[in-house]
Length: 438
Ligand code: XLS
Ligand code: CA
Ligand code: CA
Image 1 (cartoon, protein in one colour):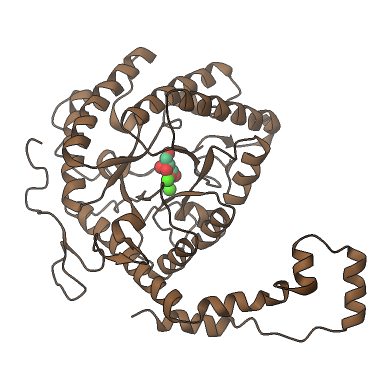
Image 2 (cartoon, rainbow, N blue to C red; image 1 turned 120 degrees about the horizontal axis):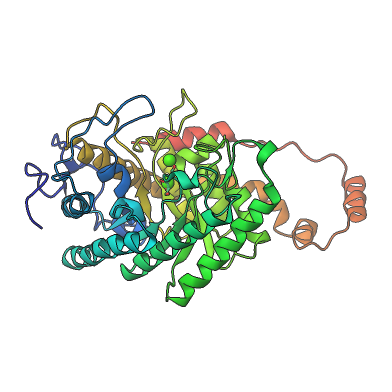
């Protein structure tokens, strides 16, 4: 590492909830064991390279507001090297074990396929050394198939085959980079895989192209030795009006239809789930309960609007709900919690990036502590599971096993008469949940 980019900030340490030091963790203690695992292993926190080091906080109405000290020259490839240096300084000071990138975050596009591959390889070689020196690992890599104008009508679902070939070239190179850096997962987010209007779209054809493309990427990945999960990241819209990977349930149906269930899982992003009209916990539960939860993009939307605001996560309630599901489902590995979140346009100090991540890590760490406490010390599970005991034996069990006909159901109803009214106990559970927030 050369010059420090964050000279006034030391390694962030755990100081506990009573500390006044804003550059300390109040709840995240990487070695603390909860439910049989360290916090570090529960979360496998990752930094999103794009928001933190590439995005100067421009928005559709205004230019960037952050000044990046790593943008030192007019040469984008040289700046990419300084950026990598700054990023690894940040990762190590924060103590996050993983990072994630898009090909184009890491290295600029060249003026040919070969040129782009060469730029990427240059940065991959450097990143390999940084990873070795710091122990920071790659949670996932991905290809940016949405910024370049050629992808305006989609990448693998583009109506023009010539564009699909470019998407293939980029995914091949991004897979090569991911494998070379020991990436544990590979993500597909279909920002432009959808449509703006059905008038000019053959939807069935595009969906099949998407499936074929994903199978070819899977085959290549396996051929070059990638053993991790391929992940699809659902999102209902933005930038397209309708995205094909709408939400967890839609994607699972698509993966099943396209015979991709064995190699693919889901990367659930909180703000995308709320954009789809669900609670964050809903899609985590849909994915986890189908054995399809691969990884999490931790961020947050805003209750007052329907945008993908990508706030850093501060909602403790959501964090507790998420951690209850994860504790029940054996955790998130080989996925992790990637902070796909950005600081606000008027958060212009370099140190704001630390405040944002410290807050996100502490929110989930506190959520884990509370979730574990609820599961271990309250009757939360009994209250939930108790509602289903009629399926644990007798005819209920037979029904669950698919051993009763509809005629038999009818006869049982006739014989047993009107069921007893049984409370769902929602308010009791809500009170219990709140009582443990302390
Ligand atoms: C955008 C997505 C994107 C993916 C990776 O909304 O969250 O950043 O995570 O391409
Ligand atoms: Ca997002
Ligand atoms: Ca994301």
